[in-house]
Image (tube, rainbow, N blue to C red; front, top):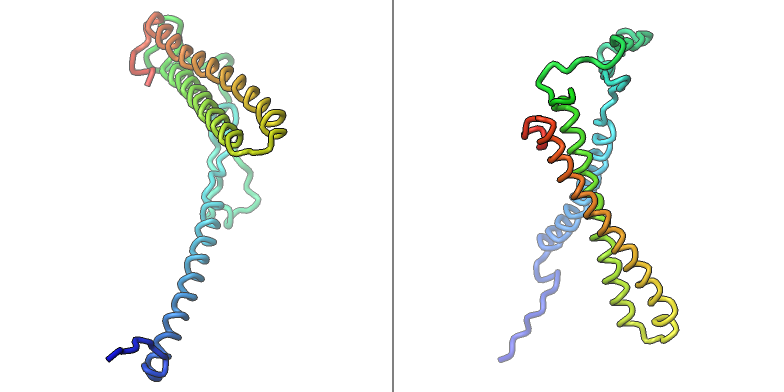
Length: 191
C-alpha cells in the first residue's frame, strides 16, 4: 500500500483557499508597512538636524516653532559683544595660560588625526589584498603583468606613506602629553 502525499487546494476546501489568500495578503501588507516606516524615519531624521547658528564662538539658538508662528518677522539676536582680546579663562590654567578647553580640543584633534590615518592604512591594506587576489585569479598574462602589477606597486607605496603618517599622528599625541606635563596642566585634560 503506497500512499500518495500530494496536497491539492481542493483537499482543504474553501477555508484552505481563504487561508492561503489571507497569508499572501498579510505578507504584502507587512512589506508596505516596513517601507512606510523607513520613509517616515528618513523624513524624521532629516528634520532633527540642529538649526543653531554659531558666530564668534557664541551659539544663537534657533527660533522655536511656537515663537516662529507668533512672530514671523522677528530678527535673530546678535551675539553678545566680547571685550577686546581673548577672554581670561575662568578655571585653572597651565604655565602658559592655556586652559582645559584648549588642551581637550588639541587632544581631540590629534586623536581624530590618528583615527583617520589608521582608517587609511586599513583601507589601503584591503586594496592591496584585493589586487593580490585579482592577480592570482587572472589567467590573462597581459592583465597580470602590465595592469595589476603596477597597481599593486603604487598601492604598496601609498600604504608605506600612510603608515608613516599614522606613526607621526601617534607621535603627536605623545608630544602633546609631554607638552601638557611640562606646562603644568592637569593630567585629566588629555582625556
